[in-house]
Structures are given as structure tokens and as C-alpha cells.
Amino acid sequence: MLLSIDHVTTYRYDSPARGVVQSHRLTPSRFEGQRVLAWEVSVTGGVEGGSFRDGAGDWVQGWSVKGPVEEIEVRVRGQIETFDTSGMLKGHREMVPPEAYLRDTPATEADEALRLLAESARHDEPLSYAHALAFAVAGAIAYRPGVTDAHTTAAEALAAGEGVCQDHAHALIACARVAGFPARYVSGYLFADAEGTPHEAAHAWAELFVPGYGWIGFDPANRCCPDQRYVRLGSGLDAREAAPIRGTARGAGAEHLKVAVSVQPPEAVKSTASQSVATQSQAQ
Image (cartoon, rainbow, N blue to C red; front, side, top):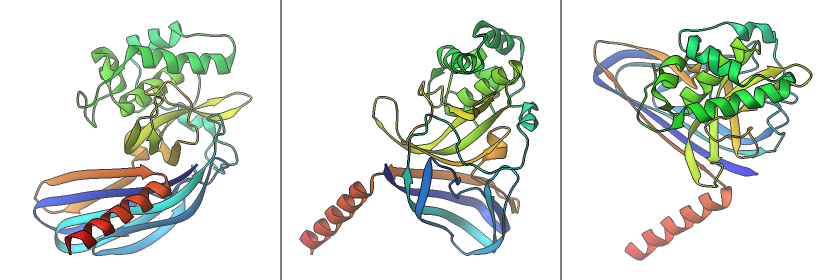
């Protein structure tokens, strides 16, 4: 599947920041499930810094913006070809051993309820157990936008019984680690949900390391494994570690964030552009 990505993150500051430093994981992962055709990241007023591929195989790019600055726009534009690998992360190079992803974080620490949920899904066969864990999380946490926030933990989301993709991923990671599976959080994009409804937003899911298979992605929010509708950016122990943009601003003013993401087939982008040109011509 050919997909065009347009992802804009806008930062606004109540009072001008003296400077901003950011670390980006905004470049798609290199593995058999996707191939980048064109990709560009820009930062208004930004100076590109050092870059490297980390031990998890993610491309990390540094940026800095000199102040005073009241607004910064980080824009990602690109085209990518995706392939269905049944959720398996084939051909992905990384140096971090899977066992490193057995560590808990505050967001993924399992309480008694999460431990019981993991036990309720138990299977003797590892792959079946991994699938059962994903379905158990999907059944225990209803998808409900706006009921949780960036700091909600897996335990809190399970107790509430509702949340968003971040909460599903955190809860699955917590249950998987209880079951002995190394597990990690994955950030990326999703073209459409399981019913085919355009998603047009950043998305998150989890990967579990299953003996005999390696890393496999599971998306409890959509009750499936990632396929050609998904674009993988990067991973980490939890949402904070896997965040596409991390940074800090020097200054006393509050920071306000706005995100807009569009994931479309290239033909739709061309069609939208043509309609826009036609409308402008008629107006003239």
C-alpha cells in the first residue's frame, strides 16, 4: 500500500521561550514491512543537530531553535510503501537484547488486576498466549477518546475500563511482562481502523517478543496485528520513551501543543490538491 503522510506538531508558548531543544524519532523504521520513497522533516527556525541510529534501531535526529520564540512547527511529509508481514518485525536490525524490555516503568507497572488479567489469558503455546493477552486487554478496556491523558498508567486505565490506544498498549505491555514476554511500546501512524474508517492520526501499539517468532506487533485498540495500514516509527519501554518528539524549552511560559496528522493514499492527496487549484481558479 502506498501512503502519504502529513504530520504537523505546533508548539506555542505563553511567553517567548529563550530556546528549544528537541530529539525526534520521526523517521520510519527500516524493516521488510515498509519502504520509504520520500521523507522530509522540517522545523521552523530550527538548526539540525547530530543524528544517530540507536540500539533499538530507531533513527534519532536532534534539533535546536534559538529564542526568543513564540511558536514552532514541526512538519513531517513523506511517502511510504507498506507490506503486510502479519505483524512480524522482519529484517529489523537492533542491538538491544529482548530481555531489556522486561523492565517495568511507572506507566506499565502491573498491579493485582493486571496480573489477574494476564493469568486469565494463559495458554501453553506462546503465540496463542500472546494473542490471548491482546484480546483480553481489548475486552477489558473500551476505546473511549478523551477519558485519559498522557500520564494515565496501565493500572489506572484498566481500573477505569476505558482509554485510548496508548492505554491499550501500556496495559498489554504490563500483562505481557507479567507473563514473561519482553514487550515494548511502538509509535507510528494508522491509515484506517479495522472497519476501514480513516484514522488520520498518530497511533500506538505494542510489540511482544515471542519465542520462535521474534518481535510481533499487537494492536488491542483494533483487535489485530499491524498490517499494511500501519507505519512504524520507533519504540521504547513506554509512551514517553517511544515519543516521536521529545524536548525541552527554556523559559517560564507554559507550552501548548497541537497535533494534526493526515494519512492518505497518494491519489487522494493529488485529488485534494487538484480540487484546491480548481476552487482557486473559479474564485479568480
